[in-house]
Image (cartoon, rainbow, N blue to C red; front, side, top):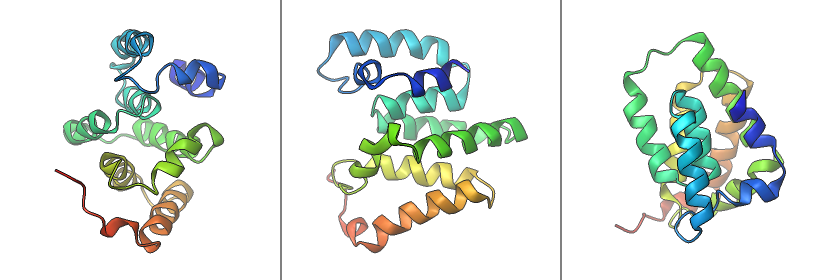
Length: 144
């Protein structure tokens, strides 16, 4: 519930979480929230997505491969995908156009896609990712 409140708070609050490399107050906020959110896999993943820490979010997905996929977990993933479609994550939609700069973002979204059963959330996320892929952006290899 707290995660949903955080995601829907005014933009000025969420901006504190963005740019963690340069903003000390954002780092402190992220660390504080992380301690509470880490007890729920989807909540901590959402926090990482809000903070644009896509590499860590991707690592969380990989580590969560051993989690039991339950109906409540799938419901949380579905709600997160619905929120990702909302204006709160507009910056994320635009970052999809820069795969060389945000390679872990694609891995995160495709990871969510692989968790979802065939549903409206699956179809909408799949369509968005295919739209970027069909635009020819995925041929750019991430810089190592």
